[in-house]
Image (cartoon, rainbow, N blue to C red):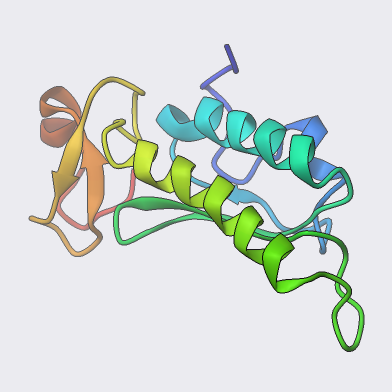
Length: 133
């Protein structure tokens, strides 16, 4: 299992080499860090040279935004490849909707704060009303 005490912007080493911009971070809570690594492995299995644009929480779900290969003017991937990449990343977005972003336990979407988050009952009481973990 991936260590969950990492700072929010830390990027696990296997993912770092795929970042379009090395200064980018992984902007999700510690409860999703393992899910991010699993998503990375699934994407690498299909697209070994994928280019990672961003990893973040968007409307309470994991957004793993990538291209099948590094972008070049005119693109270098087919519509089928792009669709397959989205199928892989969408499966992890779906999984994230039931995992507490703070601790990794079973969770549900909480819409009571400015930022929608997936949290378990315990973490719901620990995350401040202004939003972020």
